[in-house]
Amino acid sequence: MIHTLAFSGYRSLRDVTMNVGRLTAITGGNGTGKSNVYRGLRLLVDAANGELGRALAKEGGMPSAMWAGAPAKKAKSSEGKRLSIGFADDDIAFELRIGLPKEVGVADGRGPPAIGTAFFRDPVVKEETIRTVAKPHVSLLERRNMSAMLRDGEGRPVTFGAEIEEGESVLSQLAEPHRYPMLSMVRERLRRWRFYHQIRTDADSPVRAVQIGTRTPVLSHDGHDLAAAIETIAEIGDREAFDEAVADAFDGARTLIAFAEDSRFKIEFHAPGVFRPLDATELSDGTLRYLALLAALYSPRPPELLVLNEPETSLHPRVLEPLARQIVAAAQRSQVIVVSHAAPLVDAICKARDATRIELQKQGGETVVAGRASLLDGPTWKWTT
Image (cartoon, rainbow, N blue to C red):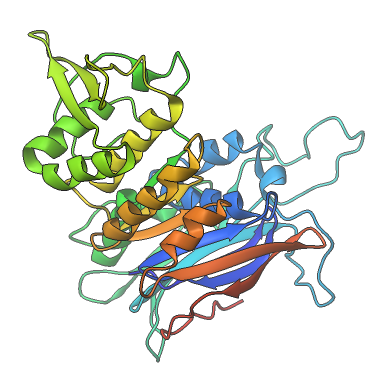
């Protein structure tokens, strides 16, 4: 289980380290940097999948992703030029530091620097490390630009020269688990993390469409396979708990999946007092999104880490407590981080034993951790400079 997250130079997260637990609620007002925490964690998964450059491009490119506020009084020379994201558990700490290619002045302000490429705003991985948490710290991966040292299955250091692509993580490039088991373990851990953020429920959303169904133990990030995911839970998951969760939120309602000979699946929502089932095109945004959240929380293949960003969107206030109960239950199967500004949802989650609450605030454009309802007793990894 992860116990520490660290962000430096990423958007409003100039220097933020936070302890997280089995169940963590990250909250704060609008614009305090909650979504930056969510995006930062997603970026680690993108790096493990070899999508670092594309992911940052979708965010507006490296200049948009880096800290642009005033430097600290004792700022490092790299501040404003690099960003770093890392995590630690009881055994290892991983950190990824990203910057820009070596900058050369632009004479007229319109063209790229004279560095031999037009892609002068692409990210460059400056450093990448995996180290043991227990002392004495042992380096399992030390990457500097295009060279890297990592340990093989026998614990022997192996050095790679100019074989590493500078714009992507080592995790996505050296895929030989029999030779580099630690690298493979970290990569596969990250790839199994799951993220859900405001699944579309508009009229043209794929969630509302009738879909060809295939066994779906993991709901897709956009929820397009919701009907198949619900049917998979019914067949190989905890169908009884899922049905109880639907009834808890919607006054005894139940959800069934109808399917035709052409393998197309359709949601049927049976509500008390309504004498025919409602299909997905008739359901409210909140009802459909709640069903998608339940499908994610009751996955027959629980992830190591599940991150929900603003799950309260479109939900009626009266279903926030039922949702909180399902999130608390999911934390028995996975580590769960919920990013939300909905006080009723956060308060209900944090009533759970050992839940951790992290409050974010903005001070001079910088995100800071204002307080926690509970602190973990575990160690906090100190990243080296």
